[in-house]
Length: 240
Image (cartoon, rainbow, N blue to C red; front, side):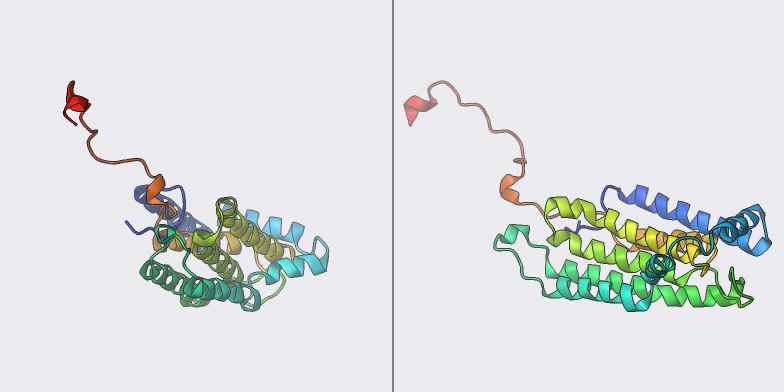
């Protein structure tokens, strides 16, 4: 089992089950969007009620978190740090460079999948935007970019962080992703289901690409393994 920390707190079967649930939710949302079902009607009512709400500079900043100019540099910095960060003095706590390479490759594949999947889906589904007659709004590319870039960056950086920061890495990535989605909806750039569909599709992708493992541990602090030693027999001390 590789030691590079991936998605925490889930075994492989649970991770695959969660990815399957997200893919099924993506299929449901996509069906509702294309068929004009009740979820789409609710989606459009919510969007019309909230679009334009909130201070424009704030909502614009939140929406821009998923732009290539912000999200990609964050992921690039995490990739560079992962590639060049020095190993700790205690080699027992070192994440092997080969496993770092696998994690970096997974991050690159995940971000490359965003345009590879979003662009044809937008062209195929051809959904109009909330405040425009232009089409090609489902699923949201900004929402997908934010989820993948911030999520992959957190996963790459977790092994180098102290325990408290390591525990906060994924929640922080989740908050940035959520903030991006809120900004996109409040600015009227996307319907809510555009954002939710992206989260479902690319959340499943991250679950499939990044394996859940435990952080490296120092073997000197690990409990002993193997059968217990035999208790001393009477007379052993006398024979020594």
